[in-house]
Structures are given as structure tokens and as C-alpha cells.
Image (cartoon, rainbow, N blue to C red):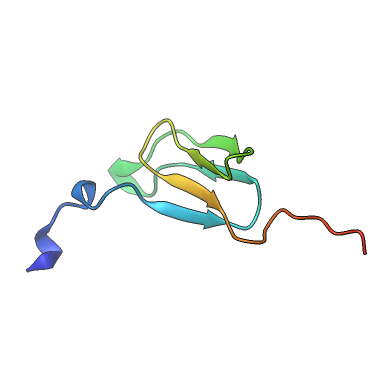
Length: 67
């Protein structure tokens, strides 16, 4: 069945973040790595240097209105 496909072939995980400050620790167990912090820049996404996770700024997030 489709459950036997390794996760590494599913492509990089994309995580939507409501804030520009994110951290990644690779997840639990053997897949983990040291916790690292990133700030999402002008491209509205950042990729983890340890794993294939990509953090995408949620649509409409990070905008400040002064009305």
C-alpha cells in the first residue's frame, strides 16, 4: 500500500507559520537535530539547514495595520 513509501520521497515538509520567527528541531526520535531558529525574510519562506523542512509565512500573517 501507499503507507510503505518512505517519507523522504514525499518531498520536503512545508510548515505554515503565523509568525516570522520559527524554530526547527527535526521532530522526535532519530529524525531530530539541534534546535535552530530562523526568521522568515522577504521571500516569505525559509528552509531548514538540517532537514528538508520549509517554513512558509501564512497568508496574511506578519502584516501590521495601524488603522
